[in-house]
Length: 318
Image 1 (cartoon, rainbow, N blue to C red):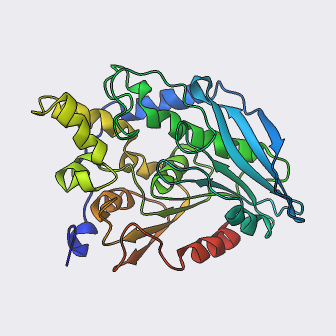
Image 2: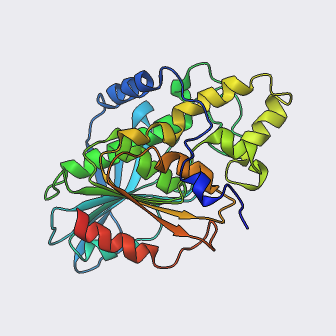
């Protein structure tokens, strides 16, 4: 039974949500703004003390002046490799334990907390309109698309990698990015906007092909806030094209062709939360070396063995 298109159709699907005409100029301007921000950061020692690594809370100033937090794990005997880790929707960067597995192999790790979600990062964004049910719609009612919440978070991911590159002992050309769901989307955006990223490991990414998600059972997916937005603010969809065009600025499928990293992509074929077609819309646009792993009987849940595969790939591909 298919919850989405058959596989042969998915393999040729290239997305529904429109791409704004000024998309490239939008992100060029965003990266120029980011370049004005310092890579300076503050460190606070964490209360966990393994004998092979040092653990810190790292704070930097992101776009808009937000104080952004990440967990830094520095191995005492680094290999020059590093990874940036991004977390799922609404939670935080997680426990130290999974980062320590990488540090034990000499890999430096920096795990970002997304602004205003479950971690310690500030959200200083001031926008018009609602924030009902989530962050996708944050900034949609503002005339200026620069006020979209995920524009700021995508730029935070780039700054995360650039800070990693500045850390002593890290080779700027041996950095990978990793995440699941929202984290997979952020890892994808990061690899697209920071072309020095060497390897991307993305697990059932979010934040793609919004109009396709809306055309499906959006209210039982991670994209439900789009339906709530229309119910409250445009119930007859008079602004349908305008809204999805604006969401196009933060649609990772439109960034995919910029990726130069090698890519490992993981998709669960019974995923009702981030439907497979929204993921294939991105994957099919990636031009770099890529490989997809399909979990046919799984949904948006723990996928056995993928974390081991990611670990091994970061050891060998960075």
